[in-house]
Length: 43
Image (cartoon, rainbow, N blue to C red; front, side, top):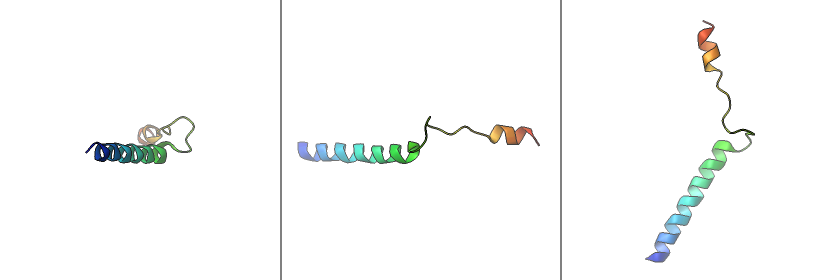
């Protein structure tokens, strides 16, 4: 039973790691700046 819990925890950590990697890979400061406000105010 303990082995199943450890495997589930390991799989969850790998899953979260992959999601984190795909969200923030290649970005120097995390999220990109949002330019939507400038576009909305110019109309």
